[in-house]
Amino acid sequence: MLTNRSKQVVKREMTWFEKAYFPAILSGLSITIKHFFMKKATVKYPEVKREFAPVYRGQHVLKRDESGAERCTACGLCAVACPAEAITMTANERKKGEENLYREEKYASVYEINMLRCIFCGLCEEACPKEAIFLTDRIVPSTFERDEFIYGKDKLVEPIDQRVDVSKRQTPAVLEFKKDKHFKHNKTYLDKMLGKAKKH
Ligand code: SF4
Ligand code: SF4
Image (tube, rainbow, N blue to C red; front, side):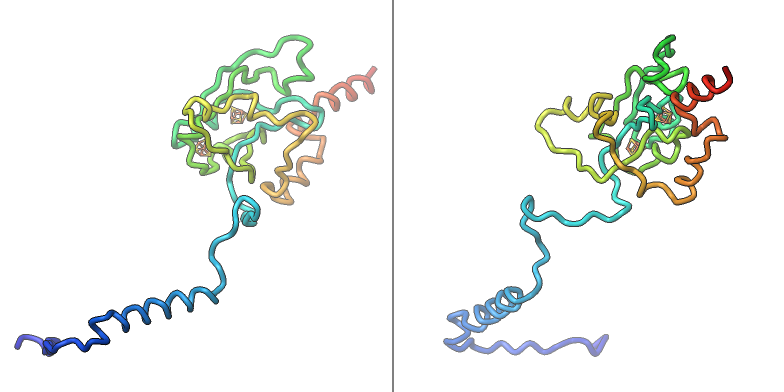
């Protein structure tokens, strides 16, 4: 004998009780009854929804500034940072008279995210120098067509009258910094217009 772990197996006849599977059935039933009284791990979705963690990262939003202009300047940093190569965009130059539509001289005329490629890592949000892209607690809905997972500006840019609150993804220091209008970064189109009006 190499080890003392070997065990002598007794080959005995099963009783009629065992042959009728009664011990196995009773043991299985006891597990079922035990789980019947335990706290349920599942919820009745969609009637009941689980609370998301504050750091949950779901569908992206392209933000507008306080005066409604799109913040994205099509710099491409989010696309470069994206490990899944899910972001594509086309840059365009802002024309005279479009200052209220686009915050910077350059803007994204096309901005697309392939939600099938996206792994919701949040690196695009971290890379953005203009606070233009954020991940939100919204779920990307399922669909049958692959094309429908390419989200363009129509789905990504927040509607002007239904702003998406992203303040919980920003630190108190960032929120405080945004109030300081001495920095060019924090000035909106309206602030600039008001500044010009004061000079005249
Ligand atoms: S969340 Fe990550 S994977 Fe998705 S688009 Fe942003 S950088 Fe790419
Ligand atoms: S979302 Fe931000 S990082 Fe991406 S192109 Fe626009 S400004 Fe640049």
